[in-house]
Length: 345
Image (cartoon, rainbow, N blue to C red; front, side, top):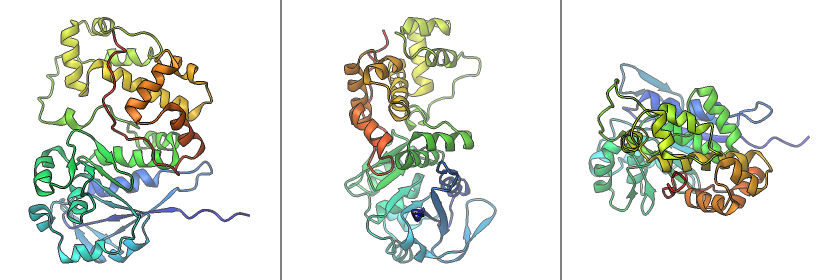
């Protein structure tokens, strides 16, 4: 009998002042990922700067069994946010204790931050010259403190190969689900999302959360139009028809849609069509012309154009990666260029 491959080890670094919700995200998402036989795909462990109690931002502490030497055994290290980063947050400088802990991390280890956990990675120099994100409220400060980092405040997460960063709080769920998908494909990630009762992918970036007034409850939303679209992605769609579903003018509907989703109706529809194409490429052997028709792009040429623009690879390359060698290749960017809105007339 062939030996089972070693389980991918994720080590979460718990720092004083941590947010319990964020600390639990890697355990919840990675811990629910299973292979077809029901075996865990990840081993998740937690360490601190020393074994023992770690303060949280709540009225309780957590007890951590492991010290920083556990970082030397990690395949992936996750750094959640903390409200007590001290000189890391104030001056962009690691404390001696934190620097000593990070020195245990082996070269080639995948590094992940949730929210302001990115300050730790940046202070250690891991983000120099790389694209990264953090909570939108901290983005300007983060950029001033770490000018060598290319901060993108508008996305939910970034993927720079072996270093991945997320925006605030719940964006950590988005990032961890993305990592599961990158490692093991859509079916596993979607199963984790269903079990966790969260969407496997959220539309738009964190731009939709940046200090915008919440729509008044009495104002109609665009939910019905979006549900109507999802049943008809393979058909030609007209903006006038969407507006009519909500009894709005096209101008009002377009403004309201952007307020609620962070993107235009055209961008959203193309994004949904790309997502449907991704599922068909991953889960079926349909020829490209059929994938194009089922996803609403009409022709294989149009499919290639939109998939390349959104994901950075061709449909053929995407299928080859996620059907044949899922988990062994670097996937397309999660937040590539904005897609063309031209599919809505």
